[in-house]
Length: 225
Ligand SMILES: C[S@@+](CC[C@H](N)C(=O)[O-])C[C@H]1O[C@@H](n2cnc3c(N)ncnc32)[C@H](O)[C@@H]1O
Image (cartoon, helix red, strand yellow):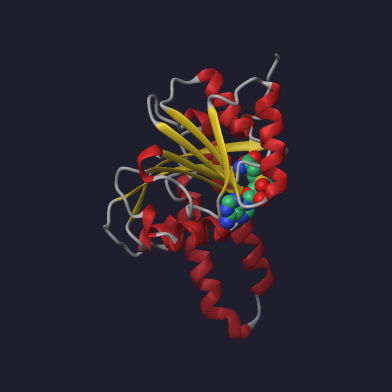
């Protein structure tokens, strides 16, 4: 059966290591686990969702591909029902950055250096990065991608226990490199957001301090691209 998935899901799949137990949190349609079972050598695949309707949708798609024996499905609120010995690479994708943060924060399970989290926030990426840095999670690398004219990042994250304060720049661009074209676009996108803030507060006397702060951020971003 022909099987096409989005560039976003394909790039998320490229972050998954070989020969690991894979878990998809909030699998919805189940396309990522299906794609992985066809393209990667894995020890096991789990697809979960907090809601029954999306899980049923995933199960229908999994059945259509005759993969019921390879992909285990069940209901789970975040990491709640995930077996420790059957989870190495864990994807939490296609949700807001704050929801992803809440899922990681809620379960002590995540504070385990052998787990590899692949996180793809649809929004509020800087809130997620701030939380990760301040709570002992290291962002190893990020891959920026474009889908439907919007730009997103995919983060590979490991718990190290080393907590660090993050600068504003680190929170808005993380490990995105200006050396590749999409990375440059990602940084330009952030730069445009800062420019909008500056335009809105320019000439407002009580916002002077804020204005100079964002102006310095803008200048730092301009130097990167
Ligand atoms: C927009 S879909 C994203 C689907 C897929 N991960 C992707 O990236 O295309 C978000 C899914 O996350 C599920 N979800 C929301 N909160 C969740 C939670 N706390 N635990 C597990 N799944 C959750 C929703 O039910 C929904 O199916």
